[in-house]
Length: 492
Picture 1 (tube, rainbow, N blue to C red):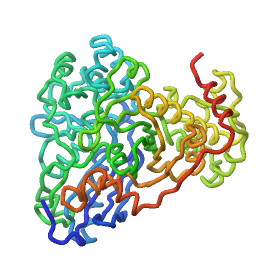
Picture 2: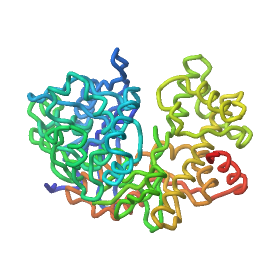
Picture 3: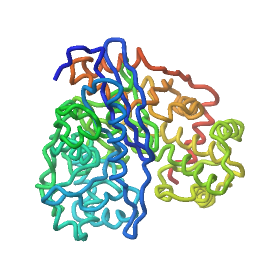
């Protein structure tokens, strides 16, 4: 589809994160890339007797209300949806949702992961899917679902963004960047892995046809158009529906040799490659091969990111002792360097809860003294994340045979000056920080490209570099001190 007046084209980007959802309108074209937040709404999981669930109905309503607000900003050329990965809903033969989707932080997945690995083996799984082992990968969640009464009634599995697209349009499909996070996708062939699906006793019919970013996903159903005020026939465009894939598409890299860290609730640290790395060394290092835009591979490691800091702040708020973020960061800057360090990916940090107490237990267990001020905890988190970025990127470069020249740190974490500077210091590489709204920008740019308003992936990135506010950090301080700190986190 094309638009006759590019200056009038407005794209609605639905961007759902782990704690909130947003509908953002965007305009894109030569020399122009502007976002406006139309509506923000909370994403509050619900703990039911059988586990932690996403309130996907509230998210859907928030999305509809946001589209209704967006409709007032001008003619909407299309709608695109991105969310987090791995979680899904099951539909019955009538297309009805079988219960609220489970949250990936629910505790049900550990035993199921062991069962899957006993059936297939870690090497076999990795040789096909190329996916980092995480206990909440979709393949393990589906195994945990096997004993549910829903299994017999299920006819279709839709990942969260595909479920929301289905409710908007009535169509069924699986966007490929998100499908590649399931553990049931063939990283080399770029298709669902019929062999793995069959081996694990899952129904192949559950898995819908794949869609690429840029493919049409349908048009708004009449009742959706009526509620939102958008015209009947408004198209929904497939974007990179895994939020990290959209974020990486908007990395403002105009030179070769770049690495990226997409930093929000999670830190996704890695490289963009032309082909997956499926070696045993890559599996042992726990790197993932996920699809990006235009057939690229996002070769990265998931690192528990700003979740650690946000859970600390929530714990302090519950105690009534929560300093503001600016005060916390100022205190962290003054705290003693490297006084305490954690492994951000220790599984004790995965579930919601009292993060400072969990950090204390981790530190005592590793022979360290816990911080005695909130600023000390914040410094511990940020220095530990910087060291995790260093380790992941150096390993990725070695495994992929790449030479790194610069790190692009995008997402909400790019606003944290301490994290950006300490990532530069830890890695010894310059860091370009921004854009903070990388995911929404990628969503809008992919819609705009489908409408002929921007060019290829490199053109999209040049446009981001030209139009968005970026900050640059050069390595400072004592590199040997970072080397010594990194050595403390190495396995004994």
